[in-house]
Length: 255
Picture 1 (cartoon, rainbow, N blue to C red):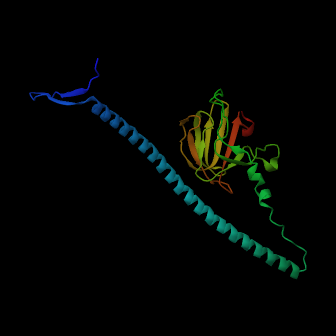
Picture 2 (cartoon, helix red, strand yellow; picture 1 turned 180 degrees about the vertical axis):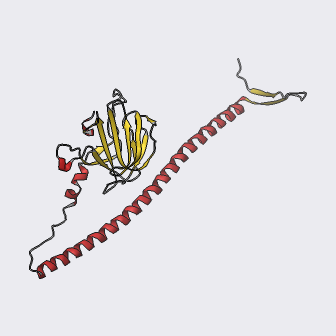
Picture 3 (cartoon, helix red, strand yellow; picture 1 turned 120 degrees about the horizontal axis):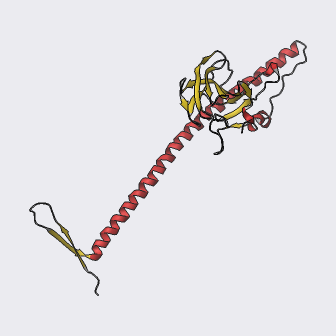
């Protein structure tokens, strides 16, 4: 059997119009089909790569702006360091004139200065799939634990942990529960209290803004607040407590 050398394409309009036929060689039709297929694939690849280029361009702009901010901060730090050195010299001269043996301690090396940051406990919400969703697990915010749990020493009593973070960092619910308090506290500033069952509750203090209201039901991992520096606080951080039968327990000991 001889292969088909020609193909006829019929166009049959609605109504009384006559049919139209177009006769072409089969290889021409195949070339047209393959051409359209390549054109479609090419367009899809173009838009996929173009979207990636736009994403990389936006990231580049963001990194450029971040580098500029870091450069300015570095300049400020250098100026502060120079001013500090000048102040040290003035203090030393005053001490010598007064006949007092006094020397300001030298600044520690960077490796020592930042050792606590490098070894601080990272805070992030992690929980196993088998964990009871009504039981607090993990930590509610990205940051570093700067003050530990302490209830034995009355002088250093601290019934939760402090997690350092920049203002506006999302605070996540560590378990399902109900918002039983969402208001301003004289000590904890903008504070949230979640009740997870009859015996367990969690407290989130010093927030910049609250994203839920009293009576709201919250799910695990949902945003409930943005961290801040409200109430009695010396720096931006989140104060986080876990209470069982209204008794504080160490959040870092919870699995």
